[in-house]
Image (cartoon, rainbow, N blue to C red; front, side):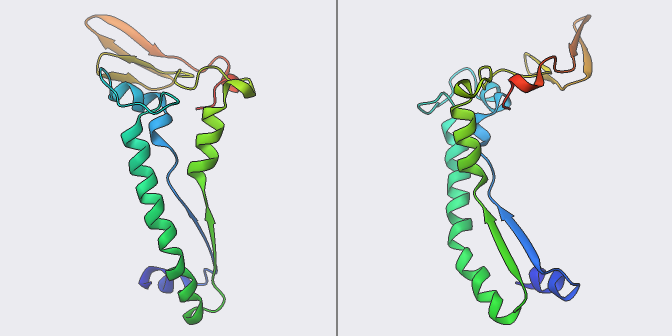
Length: 142
């Protein structure tokens, strides 16, 4: 409450609260969980998504606290956004929407335990690896 009250006293009236998305659906999550990832029915890293879902349940259960704050901060407004569900559905149905496999990187590279982000280069054992710019970003949902 104290952070909300401090911001409220500074003039903030609208708060946007959102949950974390399905982090187990991103290519980087899959790579970090190889060689034996625990995957869900769609091929995403199950423990990471379960952790996000548990956090989301706690966040949702806190909504009553936010509404109680409105008695002390009458002009405050809270908007809760369910990012997890929206992103999970979009990623899970990405092929039907014209995207490539969701677990493919748009750009960047992964070599061993080295991640090369988009537009970066790295030298490993004398070989230059590049995380080039994404050639077809509209084909990648991630």
